[in-house]
Length: 79
Image (tube, rainbow, N blue to C red; front, top):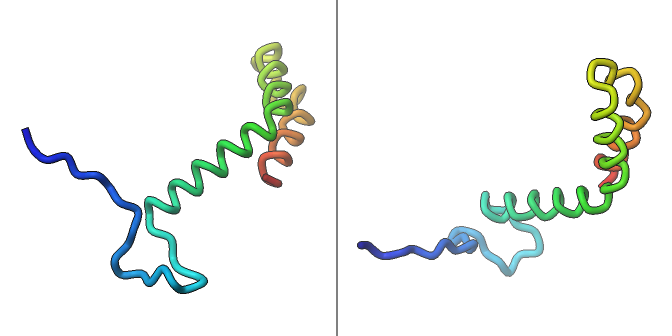
């Protein structure tokens, strides 16, 4: 029907020869997605432990699984 436009990550207004430059929205989103994937992979065990605990304790999950939640959040926040 029409042309398909391939999105580019290059911003014509930013000089790429500089050491530091502001990220474009696409670059920022790609960095965020990569960081999130790495953090989830690194913290797989604490996440799994919290999920298992939360499946066992429906109503009391905030009290009984608090230590697992803190471990999971600490792991995710350090990555």
